[in-house]
Length: 125
Image: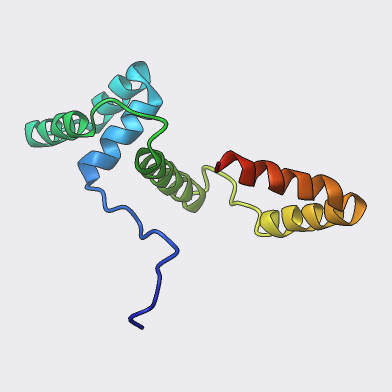
């Protein structure tokens, strides 16, 4: 196992205050203010959220870490919404369907797919 190379990133560990700060930032101030009013936060909770906002700093969309962190929070909210019946559950065959579409494209025009891969690899230069 000493030659093992991790290829997947572990979940980013976030505190509840950090998750809250990220989601509130995504929702915008008008919605965030209304939401916070509905929650009825304690002073300790308000301080923790403000501290988390400051710790997060200004959002940089080019930062892979910040983007992953944002996606993780949004996914957790969507999973909760699906669990509560507020959002429809994701279609289990979505990725299989996309895979089949790409395979169909490969059969119809393999040169186009090869050119796409060459373009992607050229971006690394």
